[in-house]
Length: 553
Image (cartoon, rainbow, N blue to C red; front, side):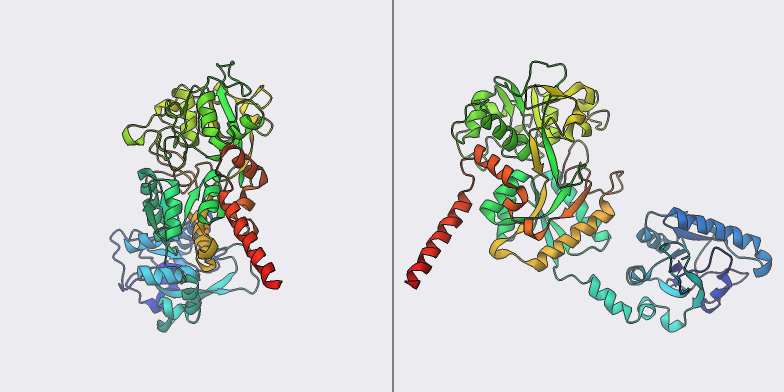
C-alpha cells in the first residue's frame, strides 16, 4: 500500500478525493497499492519536495523511474507543485517513523503493515491497487507488477480499520499472544546489558510475548530460577543442558546452528605453531586453557578422551583431581565454585585465570578467560600451552577479526590442531583432527510436570521471528544483533558463531535424546554424579512395578 500525507500535486491544495491526479499509468508503473494520510489535512513541506520512502533496490528503482516519468509527462498534468524525490530506509517501520517526523511523505504498505501504520502512526489509507488476475512471485515493491491500476478509497475506508474491514479481526487474532511475557535468564552484567537491548529491539518490532530479563549468579542458578518460575528460558552449553535436564527437568527446544548446517560442532585442541613439544598424547606438566568446568568443549570431551585412552590416571570418575594432578597450571572457570566442583578445590586449576577480585575464575563473562574466546585468549597471552575450544574459535579471533590488543597480532597460521594420534594438523583439517562432535548450545525451558506446550510454542515463535530481524552480523552502535557481542566481550547469551536458530524436533527434547549416547558416556567418565537423577527415576519405576505385581497377585 501507498503511504502519503495530504499532497498538493498541482498549483493549489488538493483535497483527498482528487489525489487520482497522481495516478500515472506509465509502464512499468502499473499501480500504487494504497495511499495514507495523517490526521493533519495538509503536509507542511517548506522546500516543496514530495519524498517517497523506499526499502529496497527495486522500490528505489521504480521511484526514480516514476520521477522521470512525471517530469516527461508534465505537459499532460500541468505544473506540479512538488518535486518528487526518493529516500531509502531500512524497513517499513523506519519509513513510518520518517513520515511521523515529516522527513518523508509517501510509502507503500501491505495489509498487515496498514494495521501497524494506522494504529501506531496515525496513517490513513486513501488509495488501493486494482489487481490483475495473474499473480507473479514479486512482492512488496513500490508498485506490484500484478496491479492493473488504482482505485480511490471513499471516506468511510480512509482509516486503517475501515480499509481492512473484516480482515482486521484476523490480524488482531494473529497478533494476540496467549503468553504475556517471557523472562530470559543471564549470568553476568554484560549479558544483562545485551538482554535489555534485545528486549528493546523485540519490542520495537511488536514481537510477542514481551521479553524481560533476569540476572542470576550462575548457570545453575538460572536453572533453579526457571524451575521456580522466576525465569522462563536460558541458553546453555551442552554440558549445562545435561545438568539442566538431569537435575531440574528442563528441556532443550531451540539449538544454535554454526557453519556445519546442523546443531553440532567439533571439539578441538589448539596449540601454538612455535611450541612443537606440546602434543595431545602427553600433556603432563603443561598449562591448559578450558572454557569452563563441565562445559562440553572445555572439559567433558577432552577429559573423557584423556581418561578413556589411558593418558592420565582416572581416579575413578574424579576428573577434577585427575586434571589438577596431571596439568601444571590451568584456567578452568568455575573450578573453585561448589556448584560445579563438589569435591576438593584445587587452586592450580585457576592459576592462569585473569579475572580481578570476585571475578577471578568465575564461570561467566566477568572472567576474561571464560568461554571459547576466553580460553583462546588464555593460550595467546595467559601462558597456556593448549586450549580446548570449538572448531570455529580460532578463525573468529585471528586475522584482525577482533580489535582488542591481545588479538591484534594473532594470525591463524600461528596455531595448529593437536590430533588424537599425537600428530598435528592445520586449522581447516578439523573434521579429521578433533576430539569429538558435540551438540550446539540450546535454549531450555521447563519440562516434566511444569511442561506447558502453549508457552513453549510462544517462546519458539518469538525467537524464530526475532532472528528474522536481528540475525545479521554487520551491525554498528545504532543497531542490534542477536549473534554479535560488544567488545571486549564474546558469546554473550548466544554464540557469536551462530548463523541461525533451529527448532529441536519434539522427539529430541529430552536432554539425553538431544545430547546423544556418545556425550552421555563421556559425561559418566568425567562426573561421579552423572546419571544420579536417572537412577532415582529407575528406582521409583522399579518400586512402582513391584507394587503393581503385588496388587495383581
